[in-house]
Image (tube, rainbow, N blue to C red):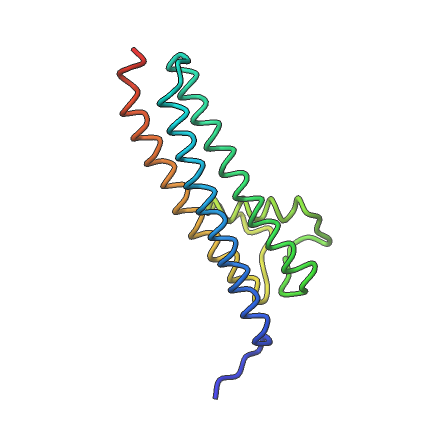
Length: 152
């Protein structure tokens, strides 16, 4: 028989919350890339403005996705009491945003770390962030390839 050092309901809660965060982030990303692509294609602005708009749009999208993960991590630890972040004496919401950004981008400074079942969220966040960042890089390459010669 399996025994769980962490209550089983916490595992289920974290897996469901993580799944929700990933689904939200991927949907935001897909829809945003579609919108950005259509805006670039339909724009009569100079090439420079279109490409810069794309870059700032992508940065904004990634920032929103980081905040989504931060919010879910904050809710899991602060309200549901599932796991914790350690490394500082106290945490505020922007610390969760910082930790999410460091994890999402796979930088991993190590000054903050997760304990308990919430680690599943942060491990999955690193994978999701890596996939979404590389998706953005591929998107940027394709858009640059499609529009670069038009701008000259």
